[in-house]
Image 1 (cartoon, one colour):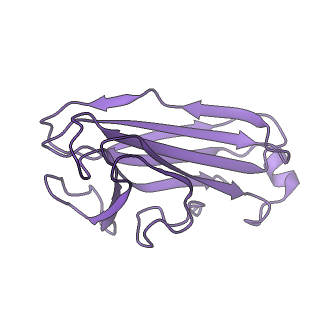
Image 2: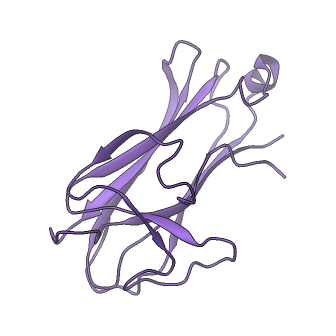
Image 3: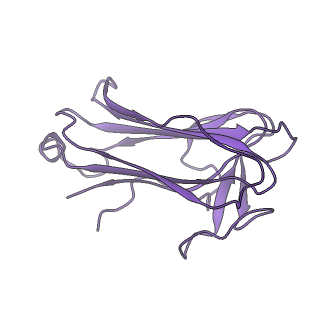
Length: 175
């Protein structure tokens, strides 16, 4: 089974390994599942999530594929790259969420990109966790880095952490 290349995908190490962290409003906060006004995560083993605030919060990781043990030949064969992220709203506050994943060359030029729409979840939902997935294939040779960026905020402008919740982020390369 392919390993997850995202480090600290669920906040077990607070914001360790996450870069370009933008702390809008009161910033990012790591909370225990299910959290206030939240739902249980649909699979076992996930106990924490990242929560956003009342202004835009985002964070990213850049994966160096050669440092992760892949060879240029393996990467130029264009294996499928599977990207996944889980997001949820609180039951008492609406929120918005976005995910952008870029496949980058050795000089950091964008070879291919996936950008979700701005997903808005209305106030008064069940707080259900949703999975957003994308598979890159036939993207061309030269990929050496993957940039994963996600973020969001609440839509009610309440002080605190009422925005989108994210956890279990992953990037996996099919062998």
